Structure formats: structure tokens, C-alpha cells
Length: 250
Image (cartoon, rainbow, N blue to C red; front, side, top):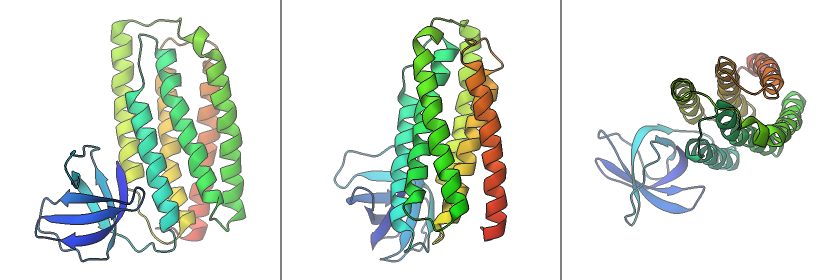
């Protein structure tokens, strides 16, 4: 999970911050006597566990001071989108149908890409990135509609317990890498570079999830949808890497 925050108070092994997304004070327990100062803007990655105390407490996995005053509204919205995607993808009800499981986890993944694209469109001055964002919105809206239309039929195709277990183990590995890369992506004052650094691992996750599903018995109607995801998002990754090079993104 990801938080962008402002430091309010500092102690040796604890800091108090203001979560810029919720305006809630949160206490961060530190693993070391790291030196931060009041007023620092920081990016916090944590495991999603937050106490019910006042203020709530979390154990940070990673904290980075960022220089991103101009892009902070963009980043705060990104953190909301990412956290919501993680919650929806990890809490959905799974069954003994790999086809069903892929669809119900990919739909919130696609919805996050749409929201991320809508977010960058509010701030970017790049016509190239605007085109990519608009294309993501169009393609993934269509993909969601296609998956929703076939869900009831596809979930009737069942898989063995061993197949489902192997499939979901692969998904957990893929999504774990994706969540970590998206949460730990470098953030600065360039919204264009931020978007690219965030969307590339998101696309890579979709490609790997689709390739994983194609290794198993899935309903025929789902296969062309997966092929489109793989082809379009590989191209999107190439396009964004080319733009990142021209923009000299870190």
C-alpha cells in the first residue's frame, strides 16, 4: 500500500504524518533512527496493516523523501487508485474456475488503468502521453465490457483443485511484483515521468497475468481477449519506454 504524506512531528523511531489523501494523522513506526524533519513530503510503502488506535499506526517498509510539490495532487490521487486496486484484486471471491478468477481480478486491474489515465489527462502537457492515456481508456473500457459479457458463461468451466492452486500461486507472485513496483516507483515533479514509471509495471502485470491464464484450460471466449491484452499492452510498454527516453525520465 502507498501513502503520500507530510511530516508533522519526529521522534527517534517514530514520525507523525498527515496522509494527504485522507487528511488523517498516522503514526509511522521506523525500523531505524532515520533522520527526517518536520515539513518533509514523503512516500511511504507499507503492508496494508493499520492499527485502530488514535492516531492509527503502521510499520513502514520503505520511506522516501520526495521533491514533488508541483505533482503532489497527481500523486495523491495515484495512491488512492493503487490502494483501491490492490484491495479489490486481493479481496475478490475466487472459485474453482480459472476463467472466472482471471476476469474478476483483471476487471479492477483495468479500472485502475482507466483511472490512472484519467488522472494524467488532468495534468499532462504531452500530446503523446495524452494519446496513450486516451487509448488505454478506450481499449480497457471495451475489454471490461467484453469480460463482463462472458463472465456468466465462462465461470461454468471448472478446473481441478491442483490447476487452480498452481494458477493462483502464479497470480500471487505476478501481482506481488506488480504491486511492489507500482508502490516503489520513483516520484518527482514530472507527472509525465511519474505516469510512465507507474503504468509500465501495471501493463507488465496484465501481460504476465494473461500469459499465465493461457497456460490453463479456460473458456474459448476469453482467449481472444487475453491475446488483445498481451499485444496492446506490450506495444504500450514499448511506446512509453520510448517517450521516457526522450523525456530523460530517471
